[in-house]
Image 1 (cartoon, rainbow, N blue to C red):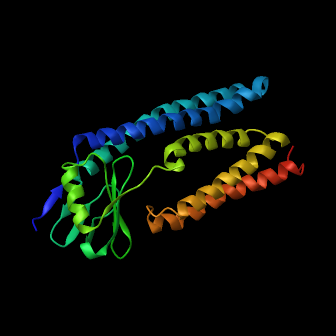
Image 2 (cartoon, rainbow, N blue to C red):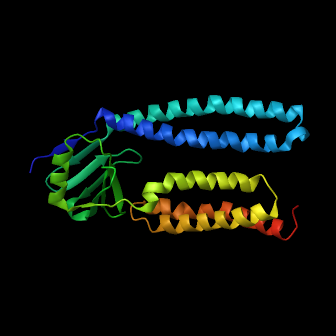
Image 3 (cartoon, rainbow, N blue to C red):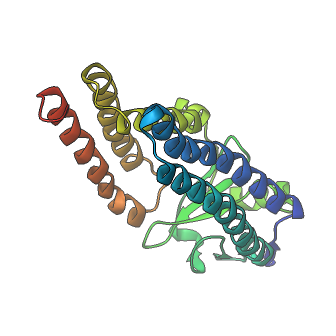
Length: 243
């Protein structure tokens, strides 16, 4: 069987850049609010030094975010331009987007899924590696046809998490900012348990996600650090150790 190679269309990078920008804007706004809100609630108690520090931080953020985005775009462009998926008579190899090259035989393929956004995930190899193929791949119909010869391409239905996940992240971040900037017992009594439940739910959901690399899953326990911080402050405030 002839060897075929599949590259990405130029639209793939454009779509990735758009997703990154749309994801960065809300987080940038939240970061700004994290510094502005404490200053606002301080009212007359805020000193000129605090105001200068606030302006300095906002100025640095205004420079840092665009520069960081530019560097990320430059790196992503190179990765997307160099993406090559090769399928021959008995193996699949790929120069992927985020990690070292992947190469495994047809017999090592364990699962192929097509996500609701059109991207394709090829699972296989001794380390359960995952080849991620963006939706904007050239000759996509031919690629799916070829993959079906290796293993049936399964359609993955959109779940609550995939549809509303980004909104949940934004909501959780806002709740976290409120939690950080108050010692009110009622607010802490509400936001503290909400944040702890959100963190625990995230760990469980991510640990059970078969599309996530095992190495990444093992690092999820770092999430317990902010969970511990939230729990400690909640207890201290509710039991009047912090007022």
